[in-house]
Amino acid sequence: MARLKVSYTPWRLRATQEIIYRPSLVVELQTPQMLLRILSIVDSGADYCLFPASVGTFLGLEISKGHLRQFTGVGGIEQPSYFHKVSLSISDGPQFIDSVGFSEGLDSLGCGILGQEGFFDRFEVRFNRKGRFFTLHW
Image (tube, rainbow, N blue to C red; front, side, top):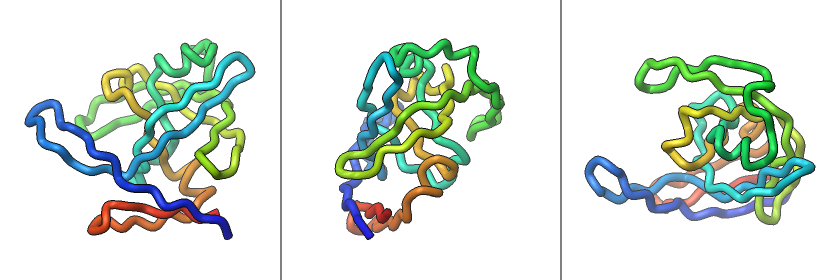
C-alpha cells in the first residue's frame, strides 16, 4: 500500500487575520483542453469533491451544461453545483477520472474541497491534528 504524508497548510482568516491550519493539498484537474493545479481542503464532512466555477471555466468546461445538484452549506443557503467528469490526480499518487462539481459559491473561497465521493472513497485518510499532518494510503 502506497502512502503520502502531507503537512497541514496555514490559512489566514479574512475576518480576524488569525492563522489556522487546515488539511489540504494541491490536486491536478485535467480536461482534454487544459490542466490546472489547485489547493484543495481535505474535508471529511463534504459529500462530494467541489471546485470554484471559475476553475471549470478555465478548464474549458461549459459549467451550466453539467449535471445539476443543489447543496446547502453552513449558512443554509442553497448553491447550485454542476458536475463534470475530469481527470484528478495528486502528487506521487494515482490519477483517476471522476465527476466533480463546480459552483460559483466557491469562487470567493478560491480553493477546492475534496469530499467523500471521489476522494475518501479512493484513499484511506488518517488525520493527525496535533502533529498538523495527514496521511493518504492507497
